[in-house]
Length: 203
Ligand SMILES: Nc1ncnc2c1ncn2[C@H]1C[C@H](O)[C@@H](COP(=O)(O)OP(=O)(O)OP(=O)(O)O)O1
Ligand SMILES: [Mg+2]
View 1 (cartoon, helix red, strand yellow):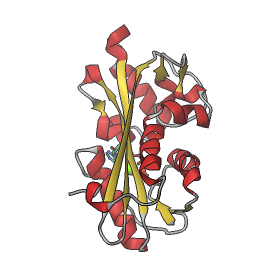
View 2: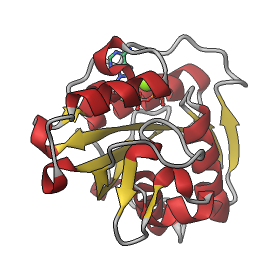
View 3: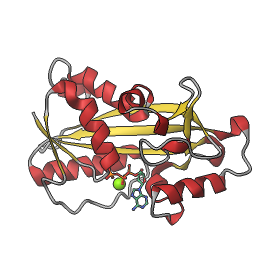
View 4: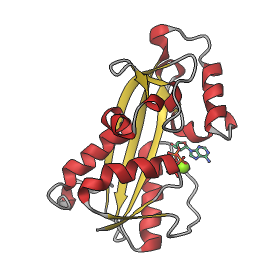
C-alpha cells in the first residue's frame, strides 16, 4: 500500500517511518505533494488529525496518515493541549519549552505530572477513516535534559526509564511514547491486512 504521511513535522516523519516499517508500506510525504495544509481549528486531537488526513487523502487520491498530538499538564487544566504547537505564541521548540517552564514555576513534585497524547488518523480517498490513540504519563522537569527528539521531549521525564524523551534513542522513545503506542495500535490492527471497515469508521 502507498500511504502519504500528512505531516510537515520532521520529528514526526522520522518516528512514523520507523514505526511503520514492519508493514512494508511505501511511504510518501508532503515533500512529494506540495499542498497547502488546512488550518488546525479543531478542539480535539482527533478532529485536527482527521482534518489533516482527510484533506491529504482527497487531494492526493492516496490513503494518508496524520498525527495530531500534544502535551497536557494536569495542574494547568490540560495546557498546552491542542495549542502545543503554538503555545504562548512562541515560534520555536526551545522558546515553547522556556514558556512552559515559566508557566509551571510555582508547581512542585507531583504537581508537575503531565501526559503526552497522540492521535493517528488514517484516511482513505473514499472518505473512510480510522483513528489510533496512544498516551503516556510523565513529569515535567525544571530544566531540559538531552538533545534528541523534538517539541517538549527534553522536559518530559519518564520515571520508569530514568530519562527524558530527548535522552532516548528512536527505538527506546518508540517503546514508551504516545506516538509509539498509537503506532503499535495501528500495527496490531493491520498485521493481517486492512481491518474490517465497520469497526473502525469515524463518524
Ligand atoms: N497554527 C496553530 N495555532 C494554534 N494551535 C496550533 C497550530 N498548529 C497546530 N496547533 C495545535 C494543534 C495540535 O493539537 C497541537 C500540536 O500540533 P501538531 O499539529 O500536532 O504539530 P505540528 O504542526 O508540528 O505537526 P503537523 O505538521 O503534523 O501538523 O498544536
Ligand atoms: Mg500542525
